[in-house]
Amino acid sequence: MSLTIKDAQTLSRMLKAARAKKHLTQATCAELLNHSLSFQKDLERCRCSPSIEGFYHICRTLNISADDCIFTDSHKTDSTYHELLRLLPLCDERSLSVLVAAAYALIGTGRNAESPAEL
Image (tube, rainbow, N blue to C red; front, side, top):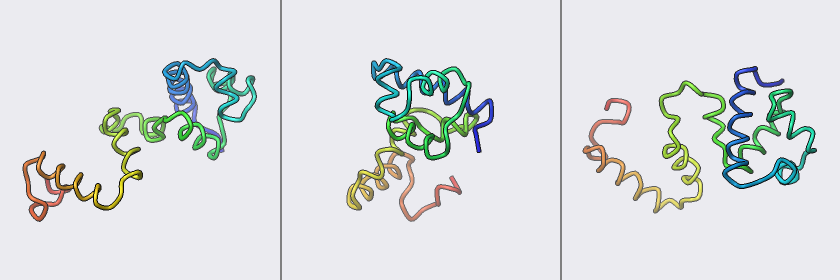
């Protein structure tokens, strides 16, 4: 199964931006991602799309938000939101509890008040 044209264009744009942000050449990026230079060029030109495993590997390796690639019209696509999502798995349970308490404090409600869905 391959990406839709719109998804491939989004991935292409994000792949180029991530590569530029890391100051990687196409050749270096291809090596980092374990694929050929020609495949790298084709990805960036929207001439092909990766497998789901390849997509996942690209996103993880270059720190690209898969959500931003797939849900381009989502209202929660800002980089701060996704940076927080990427950091959460690195936190232990105590750190997560502190983050939850801070989030409730920032939105001005207690933990046992309204659920986030009701806000």
